[in-house]
Length: 197
Ligand code: HEM
Ligand code: HEM
Image 1 (cartoon, rainbow, N blue to C red):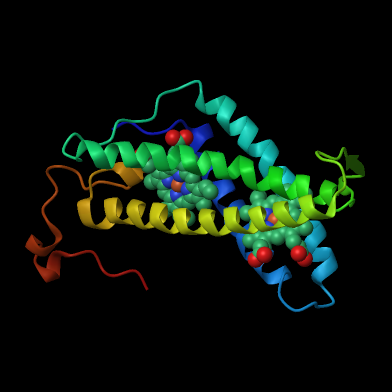
Image 2 (spheres, protein in one colour):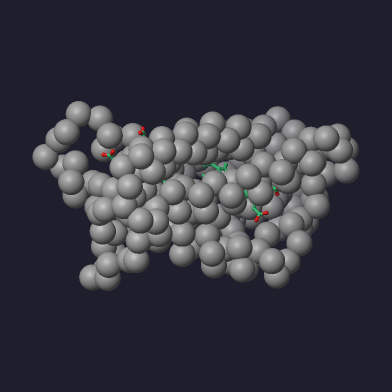
């Protein structure tokens, strides 16, 4: 069975955790001001810039191999939608950090990461800030919606179709029973191994 290379699987799950954390952190920090809001915004910026570096590495790695083929019995439209949604996820993984970074420049605020001050992507301008701030939020909610569909589809493949698509990205292989081992129900109770306590 073909799978994504280990490098791609590791970066997929690391970035999935990172992007989901960023969505939660973003929503949490724009609520009512709390004593932890300022450090949370700083953490959000650092994690966002980290995501930008990771997605650049990920794309460079991704261009070195072809994705594992989807099952042949999957309708062509569904296969095309799956591939298109993956590229849309890549686009959003770039667009979110870039709009976040640009919006800080438009607000005239520095982006500090690990003792460095990143250059501004755009010049300070209040109207531009408003636009980028709005765009950043819309892109974030677009990403959330797409991730929900994506994760739902992945779980549908894993639990309903059981067609091996989830295994393309899984970190571990599921252990299969030896082909000649009797089915558990066929083993009389007195010959079954004791349950671990
Ligand atoms: C949290 C639940 C998630 C699950 C269960 C999941 C599962 C999967 C699976 C099974 C695949 C392989 C699909 C195939 O072979 O066609 C895949 C691919 C992919 N996933 Fe996820 N994923 C999750 C979250 C995310 C998140 C949060 C992102 C990005 C924001 C993401 C981005 C991608 C991308 C871009 C691909 C295509 C990989 C490529 O072709 O390079 N996933 N995911
Ligand atoms: C990894 C990608 C990122 C995601 C998923 C993300 C997500 C979010 C979300 C969901 C919000 C709240 C939107 C709302 O409800 O109004 C937000 C706000 C914000 N984001 Fe991001 N963001 C990312 C990257 C960045 C980066 C790289 C920066 C800056 C360098 C940044 C700066 C901000 C700021 C300043 C706010 C608004 C805080 C406020 O108004 O108090 N974000 N982000």
